[in-house]
Amino acid sequence: MIPLTNAKIRELKARGQLLKPALKVGKEGLTPQFFAELETMFRRQELLKVKFADHKEEKKTLAPQLADQSGSHLIMRVGNVVVLYRPKPEAGAE
Image (cartoon, rainbow, N blue to C red; front, side, top):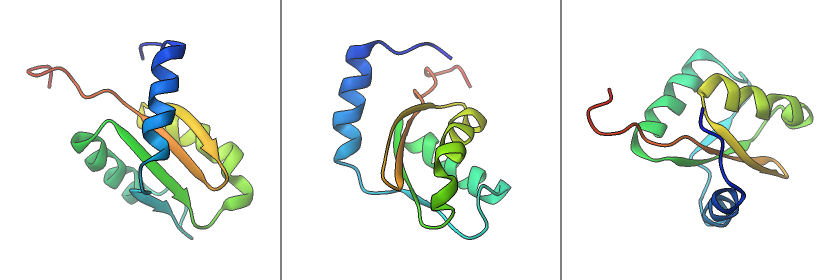
C-alpha cells in the first residue's frame, strides 16, 4: 500500500466529513458478508464512511483490523464512525 502524504490525508479527512455512512457494523461484527459488501462499495468509490452501530466498545481495535483486512487506509476515527480510503485500481490493472 502506498503511503499517503499529510496533504492527501487532510484532503481525505475533509471529504470524509461530508459523507454519510455507507455501511454499518452490526451485531454480527466483521463477517465475511460485511467484507464482501465493503469490497463492492470500494469498487464504486475510493472513500467510505463506516458506522459502528454495535461493537462500539471494540471500535478502537476493530477499526485498524477493518482497514488492514480491506486493504485500505484508516483516515480517521471519530466517535462511532471511521473513514477508509482505498484508491481505485488503474484502468486495465484488474
